[in-house]
Length: 420
Image 1: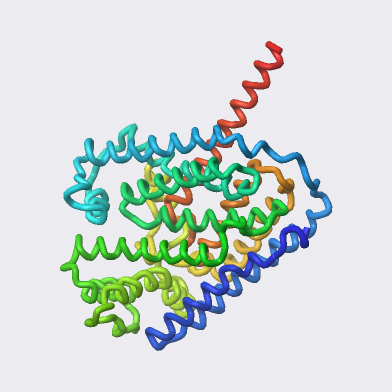
Image 2 (image 1 turned 120 degrees about the vertical axis):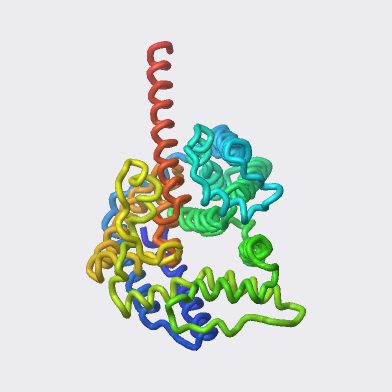
């Protein structure tokens, strides 16, 4: 098992953690040792739980089961059509029913208008929100079955999925869908290795991956530019000071490194904002490590926002609301160091169970579940994933699609047995 899967992927978040530690230390002159220590402890305990379980299950695994027909993209097309209908339904709900004029107020301000409004959910809103991330599943399947599929099938599926990603980002007015898609694709690379394939398809050379990363950073920066024009005076330096001040509120950190003048000032300021937004969990984690409980809960807030509050349950007092707090810091705040260690161990072991029982060359429920488990692991260094609505909805959508598939297969079998 070790030779087929490897454990190198467990260390993939380490360069990002070290880079965040070094970057925030350089720009603020203050190094968050508690952050670097806690994230490495989280990584070690997760790896321990994963390694013990996957090694134990390796002897029980059946290797090289028959592969699926990779050229069959019918279900992918069904899901892509479903995703396109979801984007259209959400746009209809917000533009025609709620009166949010995307074309006059812009993408950034439309999200603020939506959050300020008090509207009853329509069928279009429920349908759109639930099926919005349908494009993720054809994208996962295309990455996992890259070599087996014809080029035209790959091109059609991936191009359509990326167009739908752009539509989701436009309608939602945020960057969450882009981040979620990146993490799901990275997790799919990892699961390819579990299936006995190289991590990367040959198409994704290092220069092309670097280009994809640069385009993602530019996309995040574009959203800051749009927000600057929608809510500020369009001056990148003043907007930088505003956002940086918000992210460092209540701390001793000073936002004295923005570019006030010069030909490249806009690029530098928006790039800094992308980096600050991606690393502000560093000093939030340090605050939790140094101060202990922040006076409110972090981990249950996303589930209360999506589900429990709709059932009439009152959410507990929140801490760091509106900020991205990394998974280990969130669990440390809510359950203490012992609770955080237990969660890392259990989640690592659960991921190991999925990997241990994954059948080689077989794309089934376990493969998709493992993709989302690895995505959870990667996202946990930025935010507790259950506080990311898109991630939670995608998991529920996956369970729904699996159940629907099982039901249809059962009906098909019964019909074929009755009418051979």
